[in-house]
Length: 210
Image (cartoon, rainbow, N blue to C red; front, side, top):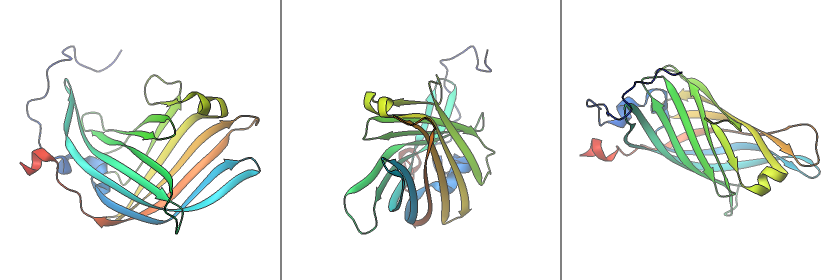
């Protein structure tokens, strides 16, 4: 059972084309950001490793998206992370942050070039300054999909991200990815934390510019 309408085809006719005005709690995240004090705790053969990192994160508004009557406003993002003073990519991630006004739902989709994707979801008020999203392995919605080696050696069973809006020019995230590492009986908490500072404003989406 669901609260969805019987008519699953008709799209809304009164969609505001200005995404930046309709992002709800995601509005403060739009733009280009820099982080210099990130901390990553990841599994190694000898035990947990703590690694500092710097990052550039760009979130740009996309045109409103519909699935029949369902309406999303969103941000397309690219996150690029390196170790301090280095050039080689430490982590790269792309995806979308989506806001569904009708249900007060936030969705994050992510893909990384190690053969893994995920979709996390959560609820928040339109004016919320903090929220949390979650994805679980095996779930039919808000789930995790990994390539065979990661499923064999570093199985991801849960992903959580907490976002806190600090000001108009700063926000932070706290991620916890629960792994079952082959050869170990206890789950491993792979964490990433960073505070971001705005270095550029977002570019309005194509329909809004028109």
